Image (cartoon, rainbow, N blue to C red; front, top):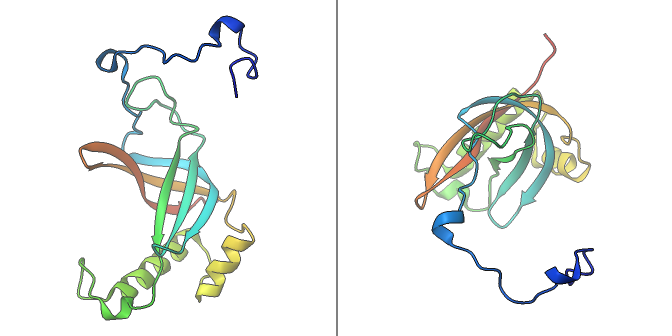
Length: 166
């Protein structure tokens, strides 16, 4: 698409690369401060190749700004990763305990189900929930933590739990 197709004036329809100075213009990603935030689940995606569910939470109903002092916390989308058991995991010890990777995954699913007040007994319950979008729009409390990976700081959701009426 050209700039004209985007409705921009003809003087902006220039194919030359726009000049920039990285050291003067680079802005790091705004990071949500560590804490617990209100949000809703907006997407649940099974990542079969790595054996996880990626649960995306959009933060809503919070006050404050991210690390840049300008970006609101509300509207940020962060992911929670739920590990699923894979074939062969019963043969591999976990790096975190004396359990197998399969036992660790099932323990994680149990904790997730308990915190989210969900009934998960088998993998079919998870498949059904994902296929039929049963978890979309559920309100949650998301515990957000920043982490360093390859020299960059990222946000991740360490845990989520159902918001219950008090």
